[in-house]
Length: 427
Image 1: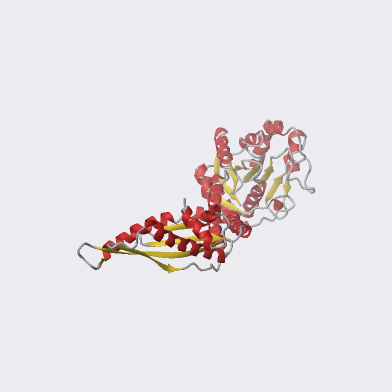
Image 2: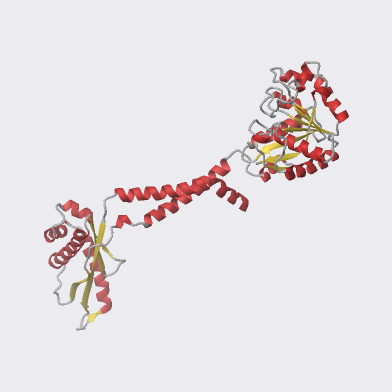
């Protein structure tokens, strides 16, 4: 995967990425709003122990610390016992049942140390602090009265209240950082979706994609609008791009002895006529006598009111001559042979020997003949038209043409022995 692929993912999927981030933030915000606020309060107790070694009147600090850690573990386990919780209920008015208190309070030893932490949660910060302090006090009383004899001659154990619980200033479930984290998660998820969509897309992603798939060069990159592809709109946008296309096509045509060129697309999702028109216009600009033939006989898409309505159909189905059907563009050496009136007999007319004779006659009078045909994979007309030309220029829409359609087009051209001169990439 190249840097260009990453940029393409961001360019094509930025809406998905941004929308996912925003969705994550909105969902997190709604959850925070819908949840009742929950406050947490903590108190910390410390266990101290004095262990007197044999024949030594002073406390052993090492033994005392070890014993304090041991006892802290025992006391923390007893923190959730019924006697401790029942005594805590007597010390506070915030809880009505033993079960409720057990779910709101936790007592834990801090990392194998002599410290014990009492945590309490509740909907009111004052009540949460009262519960934590009450459970801590109840645990001290229970430990002194029921677990150890703290007044033995060898060992003395005592509690120190390191910190009492204080009312929390903000709820623990209202942290706005959750929104930030949710947004980041949404952005990452959106990026993943954008990557999946990019690589699962069956359409061509770039000119390099088309070249890799076909094994041929992209000889031109064109910006094309369907609104500028009719006979009454012969002004070609980005003419420099068509000049570069003309140069590349002419080099390949001369090396392959190609004088008649088929411009064809894989399917009706691409527009080949605009490319054929631009290429023919650019060739005529260089001084060549060029004939542009519209072989799309079914619909006559490119017929203009000022052109003969009969066109190519009039030649093939009637008695019209090639000279009578041709239309010369004013001030240009470009002549256009329109399809003429649409006909349901397009397939038989294209297969008729008379069409071969028309192409031969055009080659006798013109330096180059450009043929625009129906999409290769949409109807049989495209395959029939391919046999008329020496070479073919395949129009591939980046982000439009499906990879398998482009591959099938080149396989079909190989079957009819029409040499492809390259690809015109349309954006």
